[in-house]
Image 1 (tube, helix red, strand yellow):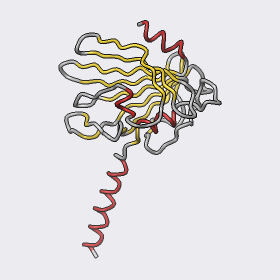
Image 2 (cartoon, rainbow, N blue to C red):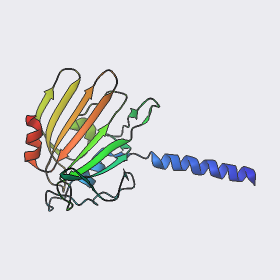
Image 3 (cartoon, rainbow, N blue to C red):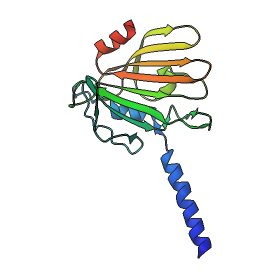
Image 4 (cartoon, rainbow, N blue to C red):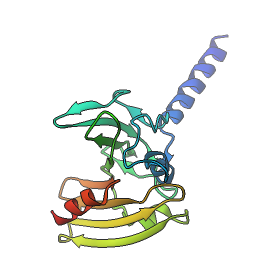
Length: 192
């Protein structure tokens, strides 16, 4: 009886650990966060209630003059996952939705600290998935910081503008993906 209970307990722990690290596909994550074609440029805060994202709070929180909803998730990019930190465990990517009102969010950001270099060009991150992509600008600020700005259209979704970036120093590597529902907000970011 003790032996059966021990085996059951170990199996439950293993299944629980595996469920916690199940990665959501990056393309699928974007599809769930970007408004549909017939929607406005603001998405409902509850658009993505995926169990893959562990939200800090079920509702957005006031952050200065705007609102934000923050969470973490394991994300795969074109089938690949990346390791983070000294423990070399799969990355728990930070996801932040932000908007000017409680009615919804108008941009989101995904940040991670992978231990190895990641090619952040969207064609590499999407692979053979269906999308229309236009590279607007690439900005290499030396070997340590690179940004690319895109206009992108996923099937059935509004056109959005995405900035991908990677920066590094002696101690860390930061990967950033910012998505804007409004072209003007993207252009302001490109000018900086």
